[in-house]
Length: 504
Image (cartoon, rainbow, N blue to C red; front, top):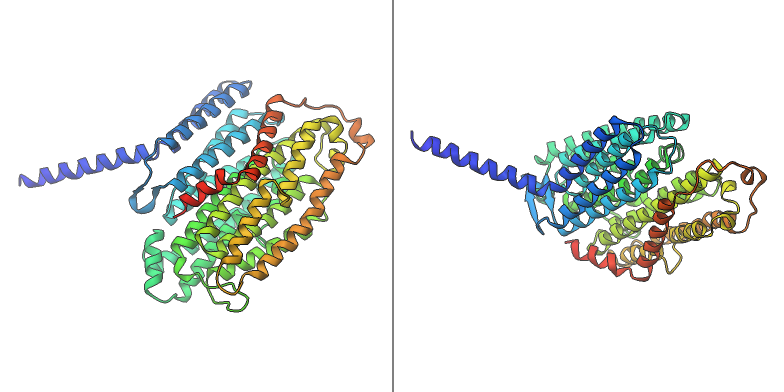
């Protein structure tokens, strides 16, 4: 009788230690959540507290980065629901940095009536990114996806003065909710056939027994859900309207933070959880598995994204279809399936995200000055704002893969990893397709630069009123991002070596 209370006390002490450890390991997410609540409370007190809310949000993000740096090197709680590794810590910092730069763009959107609420939603979306990056358990990954998705739907439809914003949010929500159902149904099939939602346990089960048809169906449905998140063709139809209609900070965050976290978690799912059923995408020895599925998605994305982008006259829609093509390039590293391939995917996703935030920053300035973001609105930008024109040139040429910018090294890293994968140059067909897509993309990126540096401003553009003066903070933000792209091109090991060392 005396042993029972002692046993209960031991269980209670063990539970207290678990919760204390959870609070310690989840401190970055907790800091961001508390910051979001404080920003929301301050924003509700007055409508003219945008600067104060932005300052609080920036301080909260800085505190979260400090909390990430204080985390232990490795930890694992509750069967992979919360995992701390050098890789997760690095990409949590990257996600927090992308949220910081997005907040710097918020001041360009003068039409946003409630900046406090908007900033709080950005912070909650950032928590979703951090949960995605820091988990190796399918249910927690789905929770992170839903937190991120619900926040992004609201961010896309936040501008009530613009009908296109409501349309963007509605289309994004309808496509997103459908693919969430696919993802959850796929996870349920994987759980039913493997008996676990932890990626390591699923891998052990797949390695011990042949793949059943229901399990293969679950894997494919899970991949479909993530194909939507990364805007891979043919699951990209939401992207052009969302990028064009959403407020510019929302589009920048959708194109950057969401992509980075999705590629991190997709890589862990396919390489850790579904690793034993890799299959082969080699042209001479194709075998069933998740690799051929991702190879087909990559090929379709490269072709559709680049060819449709040729016909665009709106810069935001052009960037949307460009994002489809870049999703195809980034998938090459996962198809390769090696450590080098995964690290190449993560490096390319990170540099691409930085580039897109900067490009949308320039679009925000042009839209504020001219009232639009078509190619004609960029005419004569070099004469009006030489610094912004130079920054936009850096972003466009990096996206095209021109040296010595980060985009060039990212594509080189991806293509070389794919070339070394397998035997007898089996992925050469995908590399050739990627090179073809890169040549095609150079044309429409140069069209944007032609409008900036060669074309004369149209009468409509030159006579447009200056609807919002160029914010100094915004110009500094764009300049810092352009400098980062140039630095990562000249010294890619500053990020690539860290990612390669973190990938185990």
